[in-house]
Image 1 (cartoon, one colour):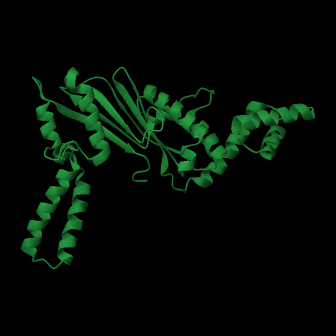
Image 2 (tube, one colour):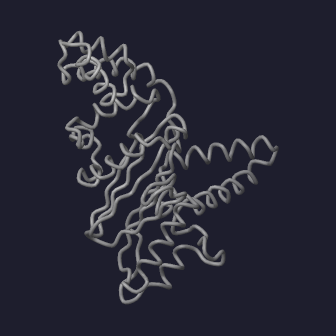
Image 3 (tube, one colour):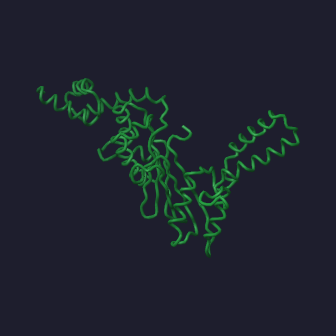
Amino acid sequence: MSNKDLLDNIKKLREMTGVGFKDCKVALDESKGDIEKSVEFLRKKGIAKASKKMSRTASEGLALVKHENGKISIIEINSETDFVAKNKDFINFCKELSEINFTSKGNLDNLNNTKMANGILVKDNLVNLIAKIGEKITIRRANFFDNTNGMNFFYVHSEIEKGIGKIVTVVKLDGVSKEKGEDLGTKIAMHIAALNPLAIDKDGIDKKIVDKELEIIKAEISNSGKPSDMAEKISKGKISKFLNDNSLLNQIWIMDPKKKVSDVLKENSNEKQLKILDFARYKVGEGV
C-alpha cells in the first residue's frame, strides 16, 4: 500500500470511527489495510476504552418522543455532561434511536440489536460513540403507547428541537371527546411534567415507597418529643397527604388550585366517563 493510500484509509477510518491517527494506523496494519476489519479491531478496542468509563455517572442527556397515527414512543439517552448532550453526533444518534424505538415498540433488547443506517447494530454504534466522544453514554429506558383503548397525548418540556427535550410526558385517556381531547390531553401531560405523580391513584403507589415514607415520618415525629398517641394521629395525617400529593387523580390541578385532577376529568366527561389509563414521565437523569 502506497503512503497516499495509507493516508487516505487512515482519514476514512478516522471519519468512520472518530479514533486518533495513531490507533487507526495500528488497526490498518493489523488488518492489512482492510477497512471493515480495521473498524472491527477499533470497535473491540473501543469496548476496552468504554468499559473504563462505565463506572462514571451519566445523568445528563436527552429525552425524545415520536408520534405517528396515534401511537407514541419515548426514550431517554444519557451522557455525563450537558456539553455532550448538545454535541451534533450525540443528537443525531439520539434522533435515529428515537425512530428505531418507535418501530421496536419500546423494547430495548430489540432496539440494541437493530441495525442503524450505517449497517452497524445500535449496541456497537453506542460503543463507537463512547470511544469517539470520550464519555459514558447509556440508553436508559424506553416506552411505547399503542393507539388501542384510548387516545395518547404528550408534552416536551425545555424543547431544544421538535420532540427533543429534558422532560417528556405521555398520557393515555379513555372517553375523551374530539373537541376537547387535544387541549385537555396536552394540559394533563403538562401537569404530569410539573408535579411528577408516582401513580394514577393512591393504591397504585409502590408499597415500599409508602412504608419508607411512613418510617421517616414516624422517626421525625418521635424525635420531636410528641406523645405516642399524638404521634400516631400526626403520622396518619402526613401519610395521607403524601399519598394525595403523589397520586395523579388527587393532585391539585396545575391550571386551577381550587380543583383536583379528578374534578377536571368529571367536568370534561360526556356520555362516557373520562379516565386516565396510563402515563409516563421521563426527566433526564432523574434517579440516576
